[in-house]
Image (cartoon, rainbow, N blue to C red; front, top):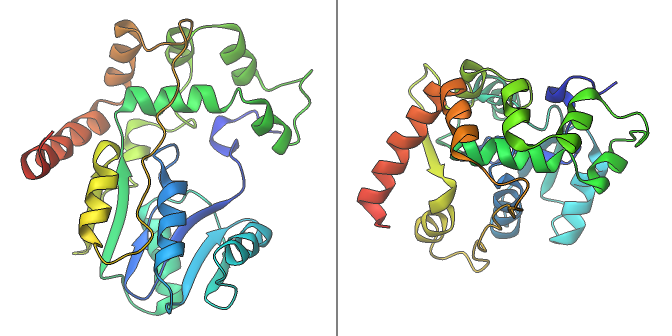
Length: 243
């Protein structure tokens, strides 16, 4: 169990959907912060949360006093755009007016994954035996980041797999936001919201686990198309918002 990194994930909430928009949660892109932001602000709307476990949905409802508004849909936490749109249409019988996704520098994306799978609280929540961990976790604990990215992929996803979170053939408005601009964009996009989106915490780097140029280059080659998309979108945001 949990030998394949793609299924190693904390079971919380994935996708947020209202009658107006859909938020597609790409792993390790600050999506939990945006999830909490949407739930806290969009009162009066029926908000659907797709997850494997209804208990976390109930907990979110209690946290934000939205027990009546928050609805649960049994499904994956991290589903690509096609999968998420299928869920949305099954609930609302239409396509969303807008889709939100977050994109991140692929080197930092992989580093966040590398650090995440080693956390004791994550290992415990997954019900794993710390004396008999999956090979990819053992490798992460025993070797540096460069060695890890040379051997393993991000949740076992290829470059094309990652792009599926951002691309769709239908004519739907997709707002893909670089993580660096998430706070600025959302607070400008929804200026009347009382609960402002707080600064996303960046991953802490240690001397042993810093992102070397060699490690970054391996990742940029492995995820060439994703990196090209990230750079394109980041350039657009820099032109529009500065920085």
